[in-house]
Length: 316
Length: 262
Image (cartoon, chains in turn green, brown):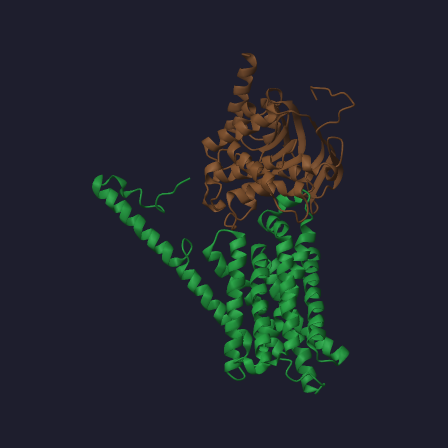
């Protein structure tokens, strides 16, 4: 049946799966960005390597679901450590995040390289989890990742009202009876799952970029959460497909970096071109205002010269 | 308190021996306070006196080191939907991608419960609340593109959408233009006329006696409570603010004058 397609069946399935992963990363990432949990997700993603290595050592099976389950366990473990560090020591949030990220990543690299050096079966090529390599995926793996992505987007849709409420005004949410800590925990757990799902595509080091860059680009275009989710999903999907295509065409090119660069290109375009918030729009607005004010100045002699000084006219 | 209640109807708000500490540093000591509605009740005191903390302790946002707070004779958990809250404006990110209308709609979420989305009835209510605070014409604007006074009124509209019987407001007049202050005061007066109790943390002594029916003077401890004219005496203010402040002396004299010529 593959004869009908210009591309092999496996490549198509992998591309479809990764498109779903990129889209879900963009959607889930929006909530992480709005609730300011992106750095926690970054720490969790760096901690996945420990779990991947331990899962292989413990089971001896080099199967994607097994390795990712291990990665999810240590990702969540790192988040628990992060919460404890902040609660029981006086470490500030950014320092605590950096500590967890550095230590867990160091441990993961040590385990991986140690296992490769000792020639433990299946440990060769595990560095695909470092930078991402979609060419290594089977159709079944890609389908699993795609299904998990669909599930993650569904969960976002279900709990959107609650998460947006907490992200915008946590004290108000708590005062009106919402369990803020439980909602935050659910959100961070979902981020951890998304990090693990994106791991084969983008790798431990870069997967967070897929959770952060598309939402930041989407934010430039809109002032509504719903629109931001849709745009971010579309941007993530595009970046993922570009990454898959280019890394498939260029031998030995890791997928993660290409995906991130594609996302960055979208972000740069948004940053310059977006209406209202974009650099170009703001520059043009500024110029129109200046012309308007200087025109008014000529008509009314020199009176409004002072008024142009501070930020232009402002309507309450 | 000056107005005794029959035992059968519990007080709207009761603090029993409330003590709050941040770490080992106590910020509120043994607060015993009973407030009944309807009315506008002011919590007045200097910076760092623990006014906002008292409010947050009542709402369960900071843990009590001792004592208890009761609403309508019950713990907060049992009557959450009867309590509305307007936090300080600085607590949120005003660049957040939501519209004025979206924020007011958030006031209906607690009654909706888990996962249910606002329907036509909630939207109607939110529109009505925006109308009451005079912001119907900016309903679709992103919340960052409002003046400070308008932002404060958005928060007030969100609290109105909670349809509560008891409202807590944390410094609603701080950094707010005169027109918005008047509008906020008008909305609060209407709530009082509808039989609600409104508890307001307030820093400005000059306006306190004209806005509030009753006040509590707080400086880590409860200094005095009762009708505004009786509590805002030069002696009490001296005890609360403990320093020769011109404004206070002036206010004290003004209050004294008003007492002499009723």
